[in-house]
Image (cartoon, rainbow, N blue to C red; front, side, top):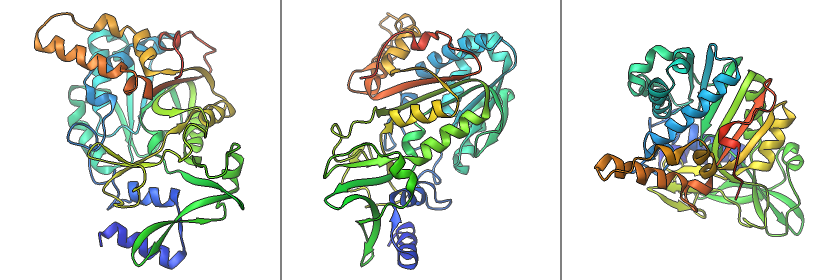
Length: 362
């Protein structure tokens, strides 16, 4: 039996079934055996899933353009830039490369903080940042207490542990993780936390859905840290509508193959993820004092920032690769419509930022 599976089975035998959130916390973040704890990078062609960062530097270049505009809104002074879920620092490197090249005044004022739970990924960040190490103010495993600038994250919230509930003939029940003869299996139990019920919309019999209390907690923490500035998030999700996903969205990913029904098979060796509930996210942000500036498909966000104008028209290898990268970032049905850009603000009013001036959610 793999060591993490053995640990989970032992814990269940000692303490009873785990909530799905408790199971995900162990599977993804156990300090020795967790999926994210054991590697500096999990995405890309040789990884288990693909993100906008893996497409190339164009994504970071367009984020840099939006950050430069935010910097001007804040008064063009010292600027704290905090990336949450920074991994090995590749996105920060792309952002700072573009900032140094296209927005030198903004670049000169940046103080970068990288937030990452995985010590392996944190150890890889200095090499990834390269010439931008002088911009690095801190590396942390949690958000700083005070930020005046921007907190941003790419595909962070979808990896937060979720509770899973289902509507039965006896009412709402929580899906839990039990074991039978050393094999991890699903079971049902009473709701483990009253906060789950408070976040629960009306759901039909037989429907399953995820409730991510951790995402709401993180949003409140980010809002408390942000003294003045912006929160910029990229993630895949949808407004709550259980009819669109009657079986829920929790799934495992391994070698770019999704396993929606086999997510208990290999704890620590597969990515576990669930769609972000945009309705709950926005409610938590506004309840914590943030103003929603925009929620749009990534396609519209990147096009509004001038993606089309940045794509070269030549026939050399670089130009062709850049066009392919641009297409991948805005592809309908792919990253373009699956990924959402979410922008919140605090203490700056309601500026009309370029990235959110047009577009919609699909």
